Every structure is written in structure tokens, then in C-alpha cells.
Length: 183
Image (cartoon, rainbow, N blue to C red; front, top):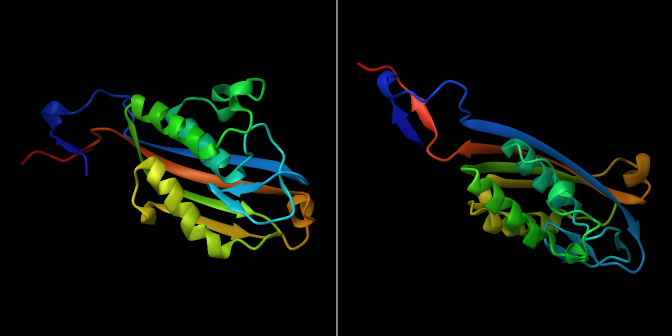
């Protein structure tokens, strides 16, 4: 838990102690690219098309983290017009996002995400993806939950044209407090 404040030492009005962020990303599947999800290279005949490694899971998580911290989105931080991010590892970009939010005095409490893909099957890789993410965010693996689902043949993910991911996170301001009444 954070610091305990009494009525006399209560923080100023308007300070945020916990903030929630949501993220979403989707990319088209194409031949000739590696499929990377959650920092794992997955054997598959197609990969996601994008400027970086196109890891939709990590992109959704980064957008959730940046949004919760009030820092915009990944397009602002890592534009696809900048060649230094060409084929960049999204795990490396997640490290940069983590630094940006910690520089703003936030700590990640937890991350929950879902990958939407008709194929390949991902259930055997979800735990390792959570470990990869937890290591970058300095969290116990139990604070990162990754799921996968299909869309039963509907939409662009259901027909195998692409993969999408949704993510939500909770941030806590460093030194967050609980206000308890003074006895």
C-alpha cells in the first residue's frame, strides 16, 4: 500500500492516485513477415504488417499505459514516419513507455489484455507473453493477464485477414495514499 495521510497532511485537491487506461491495436496479416505477439516470435506462415515488429498485443498495452498516464498514444511517441522505429522490437518500445510513465511518477499495478485471432492457436504461449511483459514493467507475472479468443469466423480477425488486441491497465501514482480518519 501507499503512504497513509491524516486529515492534517491530506494531499491537495485534484491529485490523482489511480488511473485506468485502455488500448486497442489491429494489423493485417501478410506473407514474408515474422509473427510477433507479446514479445514471442510465433511459427506461422504470415506475420503482421507494420512499421515496427507490429506486435498488436504490446501496442495495445502501450496505448493503455500512455492513456492512463495522460501521455497520448504510441503514434505520438513512435511515429511510423521515423526510420529509427523501422522493424523495432515492441518490447524495447514498451521499455521506453515504462520509463515515460515512471518519469511522470506512476507505477503499473496490473495489465489485462486479450488477443483476437482466428489462428494460430495461442493458448500455449500466453504465460510466456505475460512473463515477457511483466519483466519489462517490473511486475510479478500474476499482475499481467493475457487471454486469446477467436471471433468464430466473423470480421477481419475471424476470416484470418488480421489480428487485434485490447488492453486495460491500472496505474498508481508513486507515493499514493490512503486517507484514514484521525483517531
